[in-house]
Length: 352
Image 1 (cartoon, one colour):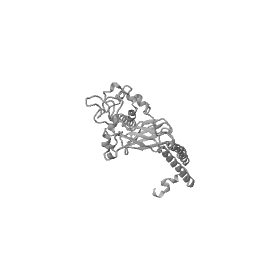
Image 2: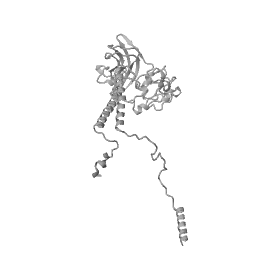
Image 3: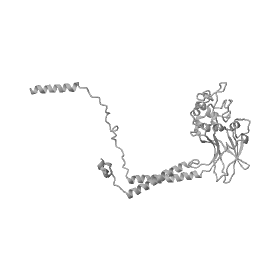
Image 4: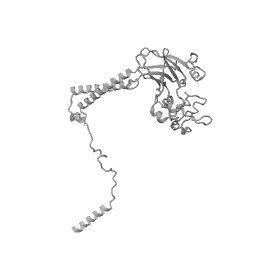
């Protein structure tokens, strides 16, 4: 009887294991990586560590901020806005008509502020435009890089709308809105009766001259339409040598920007009075823009910019303040690291 029962039980158990469906588990395959069991650094932020880190950041950041501010203060910068004053008195109420009239004399003479202190060469000459959105999507895309690089691609004008071809169907080189709106104000500088030479060589990026603008690509049909957007180009010079165009076509990310016009390669002394004879040709009145002329020296950090130094000083000062505050708290009211009495259920056992 026992043997019979045993055989019956055994057979039923065996048949159950063979016929029962296997469970499909969604549990992922075990690995130390998926279960986040790999060795890892788990620092314990003790008060001494926190105070030391904040102090170290302050010690590093504050001197960098001071050095940055000193470098920025060493930069001498002269800024002169001229778009609002280089308009005849009888045209101040209709500046757009003045700037669009090709028969009107656009010359203007400005006396810049007295040079505040010695300016060592090279002195960079910039023009600054305000409220000019070179980052507009349609404006940024209105160019053809293949046409700019190779003479064989001069008929390639895709993407250059609306300045891609003349009425006769001939391609415009360079095509597009960016080139069409080339800045065309000019400046002549003088101290007394002596003119200052402005060097316009090497003002663009070398990589742009070598790789983005072809040495065999010459301007064709440029600014030949009824509506002139900006400056013209020398049809006998390849685009790689027309650095004003190269500088202009590196579009700015913000509506207020400066672009390099040239370099004055001689020192200016404190007290010098600079006279500028300029041609106010570029139309910024249609979009309420502003034009400024900027003369600036440079430092190891670049141009004049106080933001970086102030930012370093602010972060370093804040870290020093936090280090001192944590030190006072640690000394006045210390606590044992990992003390379980500070747990919420131990501090208020009745409410747990």
